[in-house]
Each structure stands twice: as structure tokens, then as C-alpha cells.
Image (tube, rainbow, N blue to C red; front, side):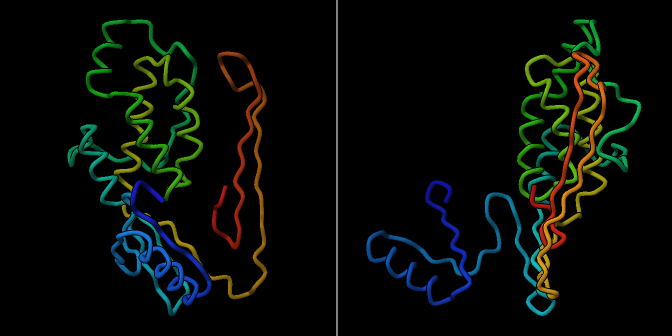
Length: 204
């Protein structure tokens, strides 16, 4: 539920009808039927193949436009590039920092990326995790990284998150983990990343 918009999900269609009937007896409400759009997410169903696709193409177009990523901007093929070395001080020139911030409002960009990552784009998780560490202490170099992520989104804006029916019935939960030893350039801490999938769909 978000403010006054509510989504109802159940295996039982009769349970959904009963809940809607009970709610409408107490509150003034409109029934918009099967959901197609919610909070910037477009939902498409393919009942025959047992697939649901989630996309934020419209939302992402607005994000790119807001942060000056236009048709002339070159896209990139990865969320992060290996040449980026992350540390708290990636530039000490205050003039450059000020110039950067007028073009890229860092915190606002990262907030938009976080929302996208949580809803439909788990492929952004690692990149967003890194740039979010510098929300309150960012320099010109960090802004370049954020712009790189936006350029990646520009090139992959048509990607959907596909949820598939598990016809095998196994519903396996599989986890992948990777760790890096002392790659944190500021405090020399080790870092760990992971992804867990349920029925081949990333859930965490």
C-alpha cells in the first residue's frame, strides 16, 4: 500500500473479491482491476508461458532526462568500469567539485538509482552499493562514476525483470557469494557481495 493505492495478491481469486468487497463496504474506493502500472513500474503478464515482466522504462527515461543524459550521450556496456578506483578523496580541486555538482546532483541521482535497483534492476546492485557510500562525502571522481551508471542505463533501458513460473516445481534457492580482500582503499576493509535466486529469479 502506498498512500491510497493498494495492490492485492493471492492464489485465490475469490479471496481477492471478498477482500475488495469488505474494503468497499467500509471505504470509498475504486477498483481498477488487474494492475498494469504502480509507482513507475510497468507490469506485463504472459499467462501462456507463465511469465511476468517488470520494467521501469518510462521512469528511467525521466531520470536520464532529469540528469542530462540525452541522445548524444554515449552508452556503456557495464554498470562499472575496472579503471574506477573508489576512495573518499577522488579529487581535491574545489572548483572542479563545484562544477561537477551543478551538473550532477549526486544524492538525488543515487536515490533514483536505489529505487530502480530495488524494483526492477538487480544488475545495478553492486554499482549502487559502492556510490551510495559517498552520499555525504563525494568529489568529482564520484560524479563521473554516477554518470557512467546513467550511461549504462541508457544502453540497457529496454531490459525487463522476468519472473517465470517454475514448471519443474523445484523452486531452488541458490546463492552466489564473492569477497575481496582489502579492496576498500579508504580503510582497507574486506568487502563481500552476494546474490540469491529463487526459481532462477534474483530475490536478494
